[in-house]
Image (cartoon, rainbow, N blue to C red; front, side):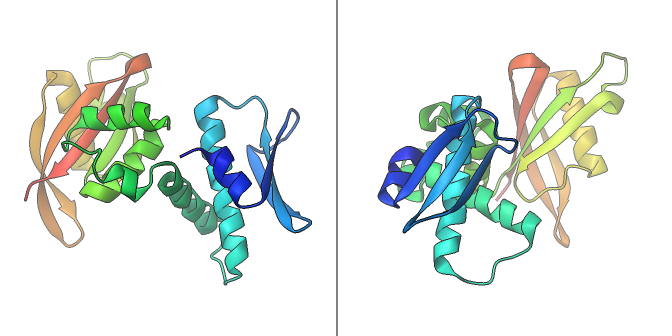
Length: 207
C-alpha cells in the first residue's frame, strides 16, 4: 500500500518538515487534515509514520471515545501495520510458517521488521523476538538482550530467555514448553541471523 496515495484519497496533505521534533503529527486543516513528518526519516520509517498518522485521522473522523495516550499510540501502530500490509494482500502471500518468511514479507511490502512481525503474528498465532548479545563472554544467557516484536509470549519469561540463549549457543532450533495464559503450550523455535549481530526468532505453537 502507498501511504501517500491513501493520504490523498482521504483529503490529507503530507508535508515533510526538516526541524520537526517528533516523528510525525496530524491535525485538522480546513475541510481536511494535514500530516507533518520529519524530513530526515529513512524511507521505511517514513512510510510507517505516514500510515500511523493516517490512523489518527481515521480515528478522529469516527469521533468516538478513544483510549489513553499510550493505548492510542499502540492502536495506531496496529492500524498502520494493517494499512501497509492489508489482509487481502497478505492472505495469499504467506506461503509457510517460518522465520525466513517474515524477512521475505518485510522486503516485499517495504516495511520494517517489526511491522512484518506484527502482521505475521496476527495471521499465524506465532511469537516473534529479536535478540542481540551486547558483549562477548562465556555466558551468553547473561548478555542476551531480548526485544519482543509480536505475539502472545512475554520477553521476560525465564524459560524463554534460556531457550533463545541455548539456540544461539548451539546454533540449532529447539522445541520447548512455555507458559501461555493458564496453560503450557509446546513451541517450535527457529531463528535466522540478521545484520549487526542480531537474530530473529520465531516461536510456532505446535497444534
